[in-house]
Image 1 (cartoon, rainbow, N blue to C red):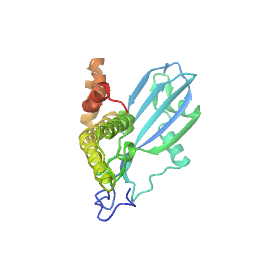
Image 2 (cartoon, rainbow, N blue to C red):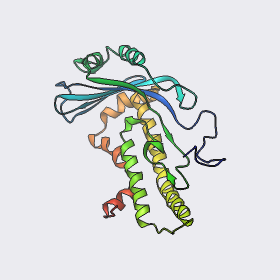
Image 3 (tube, rainbow, N blue to C red):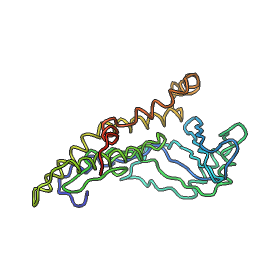
Image 4 (tube, one colour):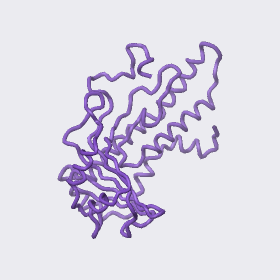
Length: 255
């Protein structure tokens, strides 16, 4: 889309560093199941400048993630955001002795890994998602820090908004088709932009809280969150849903 668009192009970043950046890297993998992480369980461990997520799975396997705060924010257009196996091993050994359960260390999970990889947690919400007859959705348009678990849901909601727009739209033939499509794309972007910006900010806040990057956040994580009722844990997921898109899909709109 960037290559085909005319200049000046609203999709092009206005600054030298570009739109997409990351403050965290994620080392994630799969290991044989442990009794401490039963099937269907979700375990989050808060640490200073890093955090963990363990997911108990089926068929004798479990998944895990280690989020590591980088020394500085990296930018896609100017930095090398790819990591090597040497980088992965260095981070794994840095946190080797961390306890992720009462009797389980991260090193034990990593040592027994079936597969693993280290990747940058890129974040962005592009200001323009369409040009002419081309539109981008999902991570291409709005990439969230994965700690919130809302990236795929946001992509599905944008796809649903686009499908509804195309279904309800009226298209002219000939040269006017591009104008009609651009109008639908503009409506989709307008409908979703505010929500995905909020989701981006929320995922960043969650990551900072879980990795306790400041003393006040550490106080919240260690003193206040443990006292909250379990129902509060689900409020964030409910607030993450887009009521406009969700309502339209539940009302019976079909592709």
